[in-house]
Image (tube, rainbow, N blue to C red):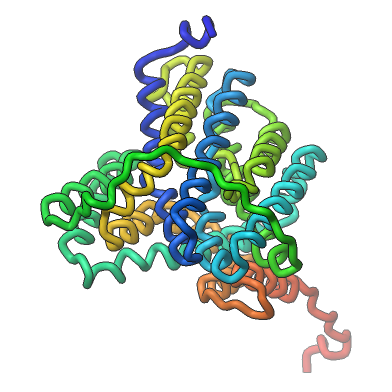
Length: 399
């Protein structure tokens, strides 16, 4: 504790708190979308927010203090997006069963140290195409909300584009601030929806099925590894930290499994917000930047306890603001995933097919679009790599 106090600085604490606020400002909206699509009660949604917040807080603080490295833990953004279509189809009990299975697979991967080998065998274009397809529907929601709240959407869109040019890290926070200001000024803010209450965790008995395994559990594993752990480790490596990946994956999987019966759909390394804690903005000395992750974890803890109040605050804003905020917050992730899916010329077709099938939202044989996107992408990749039969020597002779 004395070392933590000694290493603390205003810049690190501010960086950590901003990272946590950005996590709530954008990705949490996707969870609200999923809960609304599945018709979850406010009690279950409150328990969901409590579970992911507590897991992010405890794991982030313990891992950061243990390794003296800014390890930022958060919930999976593409995993949350996946639940918008999967949760209404499967139901919350089967979804919880899928969470447990996904965390079990991740735990085995972490213990075995097979993370690097699995990623190396999966074509990057297919993984990126699936991620882009999952997030695609959220990106277009920005413009679907335009006829409903044109002034609000245009103000948020303009703010986002300008902030992407001036201060990209604060673009989502600025969009939320402008959207809230326009909502209050226009009288669309519903103050009667606000409640002051603490979150109350609720136990959900899991159910297991093959449909949940293939439609949700396996896609959750894939997007966790490729969409969260891979970029999260890249952020740490780029900042000069040689923290091993296996313990981080194992700890996240274990924490996610323990909290799954309360609604936690998965805990992973953060990537976007982690950059705020690993850069020079947190502290000039890399050895003291872990304080930023600890400070962000403390804020996770406070906001998680007040989960019911946090949910009512979002409910008080119009649906157009939530839809526009979610789409704009995911723009960077969509853009990067599309670029990665088309980066390799030899894998480009497989990446495009994966993206199109996943973005279609098709559900067939009880399996989600993410599974079919992965299957069609791998099929296209295998067929395109088949060796052509050798041409007979006689046909090669010139006439």
